[in-house]
Structure formats: structure tokens, C-alpha cells
Image (cartoon, rainbow, N blue to C red; front, side):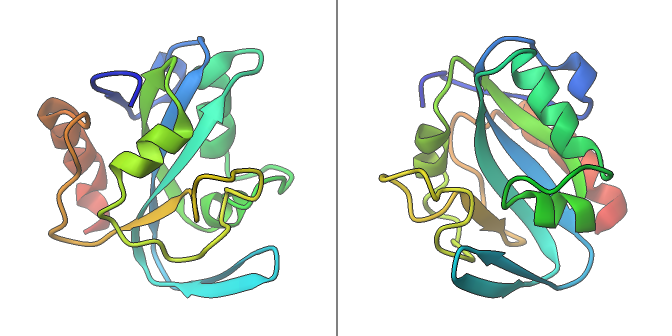
Length: 156
């Protein structure tokens, strides 16, 4: 990853306004049928990490805020999940690269090929399933992880 570590933000307003990459932590309360191009899957209830980038106006803060809104026009694959589930927060990597984050999460299962990566030649998917008991890699700092678990506690 371009950045040595991330910071976990539960609120988009606290996230930096600079460009970079992020990994959304999404809680899905019930199974959900999703599609990415011609690929379809039923996602199990649980926690997911979606890797994306923010290069436009408002940077990471604006992009994470959009993902956190439940009411929005569906534009990206991830909107299927963020409208049905809850974005608990985001690990942000100012100046980071979404594919590098995705590679760092390679030990987590990929639930659907092509999800969020239709314009990416390096990654099978930008969506990862964070199953109970699986550890996140280095770079997702312990203090951030504590905040993640606190944010997720009401969902467990």
C-alpha cells in the first residue's frame, strides 16, 4: 500500500478532503442478491470491505459521505450493498491506491468476481468478505481496528 497505515473514520466529515483510496466497512444484515456485469451472487449477511478511490472534488471525505448516504442514485456496484446495508466507516489512505489495498486484503475471500473492478485489469474484485475470526493485514492499525470493532459491536 502507498501509505504505511490507515485511519478508520466512522464519520465522513472527519475524513480528509484530499485524494486517495479507502476500504469501506459495510455491515449487511441479511443475505442480498447482487450483480456485477453478467456475474451474480448471493452475499451472506456479515461484514464486507469494499476498496475504492477518491480523486475528484472533496476527495476522500466527499466519496465516503456519498457511500454513507442510503438515499442516492445507484451508480456503482457497491451502491447495491450500501443501500441495503450500513456503512460503519472507512479505512482511508490519503494518496493511496485502491488496488494496493485490495492486494493487502488478498487473504479475505472474494464473494463476486468483477464487483467494483470492471475498469481494473489487476484485480478480480474490489469486494472482500470479512468473516468472523479473520484478521486484517498490517497497515490496518490495531487502534483503528478497535474503533472498527466498537462500530460493529451493535451489529454482532
